[in-house]
Length: 439
Image 1: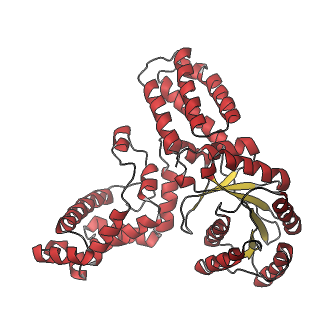
Image 2: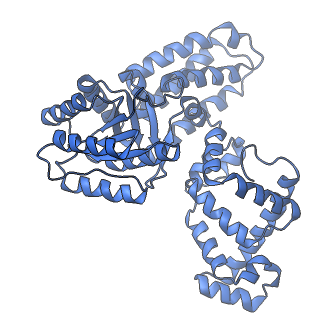
Image 3: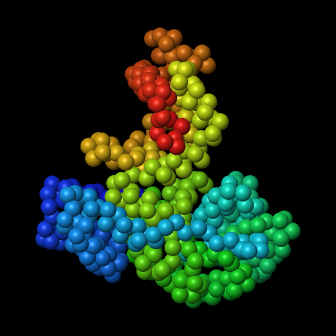
Protein backbone atom coordinates (compact mmCIF):
# COMPACT_ATOMS: atom_id res chain seq x y z
CA UNK A 1 0.00 0.00 0.00
CA UNK A 2 1.48 3.37 -1.11
CA UNK A 3 4.88 1.69 -1.37
CA UNK A 4 6.13 3.65 -4.38
CA UNK A 5 5.01 7.02 -3.00
CA UNK A 6 6.36 6.24 0.48
CA UNK A 7 9.80 5.39 -0.91
CA UNK A 8 10.01 8.62 -2.91
CA UNK A 9 8.92 10.79 0.02
CA UNK A 10 11.37 9.04 2.32
CA UNK A 11 14.16 9.90 -0.12
CA UNK A 12 13.13 13.57 -0.11
CA UNK A 13 13.13 13.83 3.69
CA UNK A 14 16.41 11.96 3.95
CA UNK A 15 18.06 14.71 1.90
CA UNK A 16 16.50 17.41 4.08
CA UNK A 17 17.86 15.82 7.25
CA UNK A 18 21.43 16.19 5.97
CA UNK A 19 21.08 19.98 6.15
CA UNK A 20 21.17 22.17 9.21
CA UNK A 21 19.11 25.27 8.58
CA UNK A 22 16.83 25.22 5.56
CA UNK A 23 16.77 28.02 3.00
CA UNK A 24 13.80 28.91 0.82
CA UNK A 25 15.65 27.28 -2.07
CA UNK A 26 16.01 24.02 -0.08
CA UNK A 27 12.29 23.93 0.65
CA UNK A 28 11.35 24.71 -2.96
CA UNK A 29 13.64 21.95 -4.24
CA UNK A 30 12.08 19.46 -1.83
CA UNK A 31 8.57 20.53 -2.75
CA UNK A 32 9.32 20.01 -6.44
CA UNK A 33 10.32 16.43 -5.66
CA UNK A 34 7.22 15.90 -3.51
CA UNK A 35 5.06 17.33 -6.31
CA UNK A 36 6.62 14.96 -8.85
CA UNK A 37 6.18 12.00 -6.48
CA UNK A 38 2.48 12.80 -6.00
CA UNK A 39 1.89 13.23 -9.74
CA UNK A 40 3.66 9.91 -10.43
CA UNK A 41 1.38 8.35 -7.79
CA UNK A 42 -1.55 9.43 -10.01
CA UNK A 43 -2.86 12.06 -7.60
CA UNK A 44 -5.16 14.59 -9.29
CA UNK A 45 -3.04 17.50 -10.55
CA UNK A 46 -5.33 20.17 -9.03
CA UNK A 47 -5.12 18.41 -5.69
CA UNK A 48 -1.32 18.33 -5.96
CA UNK A 49 -1.16 22.01 -6.87
CA UNK A 50 -3.24 23.08 -3.85
CA UNK A 51 -1.40 20.68 -1.54
CA UNK A 52 2.07 21.95 -2.51
CA UNK A 53 0.94 25.57 -2.24
CA UNK A 54 -0.36 24.99 1.28
CA UNK A 55 2.73 23.08 2.39
CA UNK A 56 5.04 25.78 1.00
CA UNK A 57 3.23 28.55 2.82
CA UNK A 58 3.47 26.71 6.13
CA UNK A 59 7.04 25.48 5.57
CA UNK A 60 8.30 29.02 4.98
CA UNK A 61 6.86 30.12 8.31
CA UNK A 62 8.86 30.81 11.43
CA UNK A 63 8.24 27.33 12.95
CA UNK A 64 10.46 25.78 10.25
CA UNK A 65 12.89 28.52 9.26
CA UNK A 66 13.87 29.25 12.87
CA UNK A 67 13.66 25.66 14.15
CA UNK A 68 16.66 23.69 15.39
CA UNK A 69 15.14 20.61 13.67
CA UNK A 70 13.72 22.09 10.44
CA UNK A 71 13.56 18.80 8.54
CA UNK A 72 11.40 17.24 11.27
CA UNK A 73 9.12 20.26 11.20
CA UNK A 74 8.67 19.85 7.42
CA UNK A 75 7.77 16.18 7.91
CA UNK A 76 5.26 17.23 10.57
CA UNK A 77 3.69 19.77 8.19
CA UNK A 78 3.51 17.26 5.32
CA UNK A 79 1.93 14.69 7.67
CA UNK A 80 -0.73 17.21 8.70
CA UNK A 81 -1.30 18.13 5.05
CA UNK A 82 -1.72 14.49 4.00
CA UNK A 83 -4.10 13.88 6.89
CA UNK A 84 -6.25 16.84 5.77
CA UNK A 85 -6.09 15.60 2.19
CA UNK A 86 -7.31 12.13 3.21
CA UNK A 87 -10.21 13.49 5.25
CA UNK A 88 -8.82 14.78 8.59
CA UNK A 89 -10.53 12.19 10.79
CA UNK A 90 -12.34 8.85 10.70
CA UNK A 91 -15.84 9.11 9.19
CA UNK A 92 -18.22 6.61 10.82
CA UNK A 93 -21.41 5.20 9.33
CA UNK A 94 -24.61 7.11 10.01
CA UNK A 95 -27.34 5.23 11.87
CA UNK A 96 -31.11 5.62 11.60
CA UNK A 97 -32.83 7.17 14.60
CA UNK A 98 -35.52 4.54 14.14
CA UNK A 99 -34.18 1.16 12.90
CA UNK A 100 -33.47 -0.30 10.47
CA UNK A 101 -30.46 1.58 9.12
CA UNK A 102 -30.38 1.18 5.34
CA UNK A 103 -27.04 1.19 3.55
CA UNK A 104 -27.02 1.25 -0.25
CA UNK A 105 -23.85 0.00 -1.95
CA UNK A 106 -23.33 1.15 -5.54
CA UNK A 107 -20.52 0.80 -8.07
CA UNK A 108 -19.35 -0.68 -11.34
CA UNK A 109 -18.88 -4.34 -12.14
CA UNK A 110 -15.46 -5.63 -11.15
CA UNK A 111 -15.02 -3.23 -8.23
CA UNK A 112 -15.71 -5.95 -5.66
CA UNK A 113 -19.08 -4.51 -4.64
CA UNK A 114 -20.87 -7.76 -3.81
CA UNK A 115 -17.94 -9.15 -1.80
CA UNK A 116 -17.55 -5.80 -0.03
CA UNK A 117 -21.25 -5.94 0.88
CA UNK A 118 -20.59 -9.23 2.73
CA UNK A 119 -17.38 -7.88 4.31
CA UNK A 120 -19.24 -4.86 5.67
CA UNK A 121 -22.04 -7.11 6.95
CA UNK A 122 -19.49 -9.21 8.83
CA UNK A 123 -17.85 -6.09 10.27
CA UNK A 124 -21.17 -4.68 11.51
CA UNK A 125 -22.35 -8.04 12.83
CA UNK A 126 -19.19 -8.40 14.93
CA UNK A 127 -19.97 -4.99 16.44
CA UNK A 128 -23.40 -6.18 17.56
CA UNK A 129 -25.73 -5.20 14.71
CA UNK A 130 -28.48 -7.54 13.47
CA UNK A 131 -27.59 -7.38 9.81
CA UNK A 132 -29.28 -8.72 6.70
CA UNK A 133 -28.34 -8.58 3.02
CA UNK A 134 -30.55 -7.65 0.10
CA UNK A 135 -29.38 -8.64 -3.42
CA UNK A 136 -30.96 -6.05 -5.73
CA UNK A 137 -28.63 -6.73 -8.67
CA UNK A 138 -30.87 -8.68 -11.04
CA UNK A 139 -28.91 -7.74 -14.17
CA UNK A 140 -26.04 -10.12 -13.40
CA UNK A 141 -27.39 -13.68 -12.94
CA UNK A 142 -24.61 -14.80 -10.61
CA UNK A 143 -24.82 -11.74 -8.33
CA UNK A 144 -27.77 -13.02 -6.27
CA UNK A 145 -26.24 -16.50 -5.87
CA UNK A 146 -22.88 -14.97 -4.92
CA UNK A 147 -24.41 -12.89 -2.13
CA UNK A 148 -26.45 -15.86 -0.86
CA UNK A 149 -23.26 -17.96 -0.69
CA UNK A 150 -21.34 -15.21 1.09
CA UNK A 151 -24.23 -14.69 3.52
CA UNK A 152 -24.06 -18.36 4.54
CA UNK A 153 -20.31 -18.06 5.18
CA UNK A 154 -20.76 -15.19 7.63
CA UNK A 155 -24.10 -16.47 9.01
CA UNK A 156 -26.07 -13.40 7.92
CA UNK A 157 -29.58 -13.75 6.40
CA UNK A 158 -29.94 -12.91 2.72
CA UNK A 159 -33.44 -12.04 1.52
CA UNK A 160 -33.29 -12.88 -2.18
CA UNK A 161 -36.12 -12.64 -4.69
CA UNK A 162 -34.44 -13.27 -8.06
CA UNK A 163 -37.78 -13.91 -9.75
CA UNK A 164 -38.77 -10.26 -9.21
CA UNK A 165 -39.36 -8.15 -12.31
CA UNK A 166 -37.13 -5.31 -11.09
CA UNK A 167 -34.66 -4.35 -8.39
CA UNK A 168 -37.38 -2.17 -6.84
CA UNK A 169 -39.68 -5.16 -6.45
CA UNK A 170 -36.86 -7.30 -5.05
CA UNK A 171 -36.02 -4.61 -2.50
CA UNK A 172 -39.67 -4.11 -1.49
CA UNK A 173 -40.12 -7.82 -0.77
CA UNK A 174 -36.79 -8.10 1.02
CA UNK A 175 -37.54 -5.02 3.13
CA UNK A 176 -40.68 -6.67 4.50
CA UNK A 177 -38.74 -9.83 5.36
CA UNK A 178 -36.05 -7.77 7.07
CA UNK A 179 -38.68 -6.11 9.24
CA UNK A 180 -40.20 -9.46 10.22
CA UNK A 181 -36.74 -10.81 11.09
CA UNK A 182 -35.99 -7.84 13.36
CA UNK A 183 -32.93 -6.67 11.44
CA UNK A 184 -31.56 -3.29 12.53
CA UNK A 185 -29.20 -2.90 9.56
CA UNK A 186 -30.06 -3.63 5.92
CA UNK A 187 -27.26 -3.73 3.31
CA UNK A 188 -28.48 -3.42 -0.28
CA UNK A 189 -26.29 -4.68 -3.14
CA UNK A 190 -27.22 -2.83 -6.34
CA UNK A 191 -26.64 -3.47 -10.03
CA UNK A 192 -23.38 -2.53 -11.71
CA UNK A 193 -22.15 -2.02 -15.24
CA UNK A 194 -18.78 -2.14 -16.93
CA UNK A 195 -18.96 1.65 -17.24
CA UNK A 196 -21.10 4.56 -16.10
CA UNK A 197 -24.23 4.78 -18.28
CA UNK A 198 -27.70 6.32 -18.11
CA UNK A 199 -29.56 3.04 -17.58
CA UNK A 200 -27.40 2.19 -14.56
CA UNK A 201 -27.86 5.62 -13.04
CA UNK A 202 -31.63 5.56 -13.51
CA UNK A 203 -31.91 2.14 -11.84
CA UNK A 204 -29.78 2.96 -8.78
CA UNK A 205 -31.36 6.42 -8.45
CA UNK A 206 -34.85 4.87 -8.39
CA UNK A 207 -33.73 2.35 -5.78
CA UNK A 208 -32.17 5.12 -3.70
CA UNK A 209 -35.44 7.05 -3.72
CA UNK A 210 -37.39 3.98 -2.65
CA UNK A 211 -34.99 2.90 0.09
CA UNK A 212 -34.15 6.40 1.41
CA UNK A 213 -30.86 5.07 2.81
CA UNK A 214 -28.92 6.62 5.64
CA UNK A 215 -25.75 5.80 3.71
CA UNK A 216 -25.16 5.65 -0.03
CA UNK A 217 -21.67 4.20 -0.41
CA UNK A 218 -19.69 3.86 -3.61
CA UNK A 219 -17.46 0.80 -3.87
CA UNK A 220 -14.57 1.58 -6.21
CA UNK A 221 -11.32 -0.14 -7.21
CA UNK A 222 -8.38 1.92 -5.88
CA UNK A 223 -6.04 0.46 -8.50
CA UNK A 224 -7.87 2.27 -11.33
CA UNK A 225 -6.33 5.55 -10.16
CA UNK A 226 -7.90 8.67 -11.64
CA UNK A 227 -10.65 6.58 -13.27
CA UNK A 228 -11.81 5.78 -9.73
CA UNK A 229 -12.06 9.50 -8.99
CA UNK A 230 -14.03 10.10 -12.20
CA UNK A 231 -16.44 7.27 -11.36
CA UNK A 232 -16.93 8.71 -7.86
CA UNK A 233 -17.65 12.15 -9.28
CA UNK A 234 -20.24 10.73 -11.73
CA UNK A 235 -22.07 8.73 -9.05
CA UNK A 236 -21.98 11.63 -6.60
CA UNK A 237 -23.60 13.99 -9.11
CA UNK A 238 -26.58 11.65 -9.51
CA UNK A 239 -26.94 10.04 -6.09
CA UNK A 240 -25.29 12.31 -3.51
CA UNK A 241 -22.89 9.80 -2.04
CA UNK A 242 -22.26 9.78 1.71
CA UNK A 243 -19.16 7.61 1.67
CA UNK A 244 -16.67 5.59 -0.37
CA UNK A 245 -15.08 2.18 0.11
CA UNK A 246 -11.80 1.74 -1.75
CA UNK A 247 -11.14 -1.90 -2.63
CA UNK A 248 -7.74 -3.44 -3.43
CA UNK A 249 -5.99 -0.65 -1.52
CA UNK A 250 -3.39 -3.15 -0.32
CA UNK A 251 -2.37 -3.76 -3.95
CA UNK A 252 -2.19 -0.06 -4.84
CA UNK A 253 1.47 0.93 -4.51
CA UNK A 254 0.78 4.45 -5.81
CA UNK A 255 -2.25 5.59 -3.81
CA UNK A 256 -3.48 8.31 -6.19
CA UNK A 257 -7.17 7.46 -5.80
CA UNK A 258 -7.09 7.52 -2.00
CA UNK A 259 -5.24 10.83 -1.92
CA UNK A 260 -7.50 12.48 -4.51
CA UNK A 261 -10.93 11.15 -3.58
CA UNK A 262 -11.88 13.41 -0.68
CA UNK A 263 -10.61 16.64 -2.25
CA UNK A 264 -12.21 16.06 -5.66
CA UNK A 265 -15.59 14.71 -4.53
CA UNK A 266 -15.93 16.04 -0.98
CA UNK A 267 -17.03 12.53 0.02
CA UNK A 268 -15.15 10.72 2.82
CA UNK A 269 -13.52 7.33 2.40
CA UNK A 270 -15.09 5.20 5.14
CA UNK A 271 -13.46 1.80 4.63
CA UNK A 272 -10.59 0.24 2.73
CA UNK A 273 -10.54 -3.25 1.23
CA UNK A 274 -7.18 -4.83 2.09
CA UNK A 275 -7.54 -8.47 1.13
CA UNK A 276 -9.68 -11.02 -0.64
CA UNK A 277 -10.91 -12.73 2.54
CA UNK A 278 -14.10 -11.66 4.26
CA UNK A 279 -11.98 -10.17 7.08
CA UNK A 280 -10.24 -7.86 4.61
CA UNK A 281 -12.04 -4.61 5.40
CA UNK A 282 -10.55 -1.86 7.56
CA UNK A 283 -11.97 1.44 8.81
CA UNK A 284 -10.23 4.28 6.96
CA UNK A 285 -8.24 6.45 9.39
CA UNK A 286 -6.69 9.44 7.54
CA UNK A 287 -4.03 10.13 10.18
CA UNK A 288 -2.91 6.49 10.27
CA UNK A 289 -2.73 6.30 6.48
CA UNK A 290 -0.68 9.52 6.39
CA UNK A 291 1.73 7.99 8.92
CA UNK A 292 2.16 4.89 6.77
CA UNK A 293 2.84 6.99 3.68
CA UNK A 294 5.59 8.84 5.56
CA UNK A 295 7.16 5.64 6.89
CA UNK A 296 6.04 6.24 10.48
CA UNK A 297 4.22 2.91 10.70
CA UNK A 298 0.68 2.36 11.93
CA UNK A 299 0.86 0.75 15.35
CA UNK A 300 -2.77 1.64 16.22
CA UNK A 301 -4.14 -0.37 13.28
CA UNK A 302 -1.76 -3.22 14.15
CA UNK A 303 -3.11 -3.19 17.70
CA UNK A 304 -6.69 -3.20 16.37
CA UNK A 305 -5.87 -6.25 14.25
CA UNK A 306 -4.16 -8.02 17.14
CA UNK A 307 -7.06 -7.39 19.52
CA UNK A 308 -9.43 -8.79 16.90
CA UNK A 309 -7.33 -11.92 16.35
CA UNK A 310 -6.30 -12.57 19.97
CA UNK A 311 -8.96 -12.86 22.65
CA UNK A 312 -8.11 -11.44 26.08
CA UNK A 313 -8.15 -14.85 27.77
CA UNK A 314 -5.85 -16.32 25.11
CA UNK A 315 -3.43 -13.41 25.47
CA UNK A 316 -3.35 -13.77 29.26
CA UNK A 317 -2.74 -17.53 28.97
CA UNK A 318 0.10 -16.93 26.52
CA UNK A 319 1.63 -14.27 28.76
CA UNK A 320 1.62 -16.66 31.73
CA UNK A 321 3.37 -19.32 29.63
CA UNK A 322 5.95 -16.76 28.45
CA UNK A 323 6.80 -15.78 32.02
CA UNK A 324 7.15 -19.41 33.12
CA UNK A 325 9.16 -20.42 30.06
CA UNK A 326 6.49 -22.99 29.11
CA UNK A 327 5.88 -21.70 25.58
CA UNK A 328 6.05 -24.71 23.23
CA UNK A 329 5.65 -25.51 19.53
CA UNK A 330 1.91 -26.12 19.92
CA UNK A 331 1.58 -22.55 21.21
CA UNK A 332 3.90 -21.40 18.41
CA UNK A 333 1.67 -23.02 15.76
CA UNK A 334 -1.45 -21.47 17.29
CA UNK A 335 0.10 -18.00 17.31
CA UNK A 336 1.17 -18.35 13.68
CA UNK A 337 -2.46 -19.00 12.79
CA UNK A 338 -3.50 -15.86 14.68
CA UNK A 339 -0.84 -13.81 12.92
CA UNK A 340 -2.17 -14.99 9.56
CA UNK A 341 -5.60 -13.73 10.58
CA UNK A 342 -4.09 -10.28 10.99
CA UNK A 343 -3.12 -10.10 7.31
CA UNK A 344 -0.07 -10.64 5.15
CA UNK A 345 3.40 -10.43 6.65
CA UNK A 346 4.24 -7.53 4.33
CA UNK A 347 1.21 -5.61 5.59
CA UNK A 348 2.04 -6.29 9.24
CA UNK A 349 5.68 -5.23 8.81
CA UNK A 350 4.61 -2.05 7.02
CA UNK A 351 2.68 -1.00 10.14
CA UNK A 352 5.75 -1.16 12.38
CA UNK A 353 7.67 2.13 12.85
CA UNK A 354 11.00 0.55 12.02
CA UNK A 355 14.25 2.56 11.73
CA UNK A 356 15.48 3.24 8.20
CA UNK A 357 18.24 0.61 8.18
CA UNK A 358 15.99 -2.11 9.59
CA UNK A 359 13.20 -1.22 7.18
CA UNK A 360 15.61 -1.36 4.24
CA UNK A 361 16.69 -4.87 5.28
CA UNK A 362 13.14 -6.22 4.89
CA UNK A 363 12.69 -7.86 1.45
CA UNK A 364 10.13 -6.24 -0.86
CA UNK A 365 8.29 -9.54 -1.29
CA UNK A 366 8.07 -11.36 2.04
CA UNK A 367 7.75 -15.12 1.52
CA UNK A 368 4.21 -15.82 2.75
CA UNK A 369 4.77 -19.54 2.02
CA UNK A 370 7.24 -19.72 4.90
CA UNK A 371 4.38 -19.75 7.42
CA UNK A 372 2.77 -22.64 5.54
CA UNK A 373 6.04 -24.61 5.61
CA UNK A 374 6.48 -23.96 9.33
CA UNK A 375 2.95 -25.15 10.05
CA UNK A 376 3.52 -28.29 7.93
CA UNK A 377 6.68 -29.12 9.90
CA UNK A 378 4.99 -28.67 13.28
CA UNK A 379 1.94 -30.67 12.12
CA UNK A 380 4.29 -33.56 11.23
CA UNK A 381 5.51 -33.80 14.82
CA UNK A 382 3.94 -35.89 17.56
CA UNK A 383 2.30 -34.06 20.51
CA UNK A 384 5.25 -35.04 22.68
CA UNK A 385 7.72 -33.56 20.17
CA UNK A 386 5.75 -30.30 19.95
CA UNK A 387 5.71 -29.98 23.73
CA UNK A 388 9.42 -30.79 24.11
CA UNK A 389 11.53 -30.17 20.95
CA UNK A 390 14.67 -31.21 22.86
CA UNK A 391 13.81 -34.88 22.19
CA UNK A 392 14.17 -34.34 18.43
CA UNK A 393 17.13 -36.47 17.39
CA UNK A 394 18.40 -37.07 13.84
CA UNK A 395 15.95 -39.85 12.95
CA UNK A 396 12.96 -37.90 14.27
CA UNK A 397 13.95 -34.81 12.28
CA UNK A 398 14.33 -36.93 9.15
CA UNK A 399 10.84 -38.38 9.66
CA UNK A 400 9.34 -34.92 10.23
CA UNK A 401 10.98 -33.47 7.11
CA UNK A 402 9.68 -36.37 5.00
CA UNK A 403 6.15 -35.94 6.40
CA UNK A 404 6.11 -32.19 5.76
CA UNK A 405 7.73 -32.21 2.33
CA UNK A 406 10.73 -30.25 3.59
CA UNK A 407 14.37 -31.01 4.35
CA UNK A 408 16.10 -31.81 7.68
CA UNK A 409 17.83 -28.42 7.31
CA UNK A 410 14.40 -26.74 7.26
CA UNK A 411 13.44 -28.57 10.46
CA UNK A 412 16.74 -27.57 12.12
CA UNK A 413 16.21 -23.95 11.10
CA UNK A 414 12.68 -23.93 12.54
CA UNK A 415 13.84 -25.33 15.88
CA UNK A 416 16.58 -22.71 16.06
CA UNK A 417 14.11 -19.92 15.22
CA UNK A 418 11.68 -21.25 17.79
CA UNK A 419 14.29 -21.27 20.56
CA UNK A 420 15.25 -17.68 19.68
CA UNK A 421 11.59 -16.64 19.67
CA UNK A 422 11.02 -18.37 23.00
CA UNK A 423 13.91 -16.43 24.59
CA UNK A 424 12.65 -13.15 23.12
CA UNK A 425 9.07 -13.75 24.30
CA UNK A 426 10.30 -14.64 27.78
CA UNK A 427 12.21 -11.35 27.86
CA UNK A 428 9.11 -9.40 26.76
CA UNK A 429 7.06 -11.35 29.29
CA UNK A 430 9.22 -10.01 32.11
CA UNK A 431 8.73 -6.51 30.79
CA UNK A 432 5.73 -4.93 29.15
CA UNK A 433 6.14 -6.20 25.60
CA UNK A 434 4.59 -4.30 22.73
CA UNK A 435 1.71 -2.10 23.98
CA UNK A 436 -1.67 -3.59 23.12
CA UNK A 437 -0.18 -6.72 21.58
CA UNK A 438 -0.10 -10.20 23.10
CA UNK A 439 3.65 -10.51 22.54
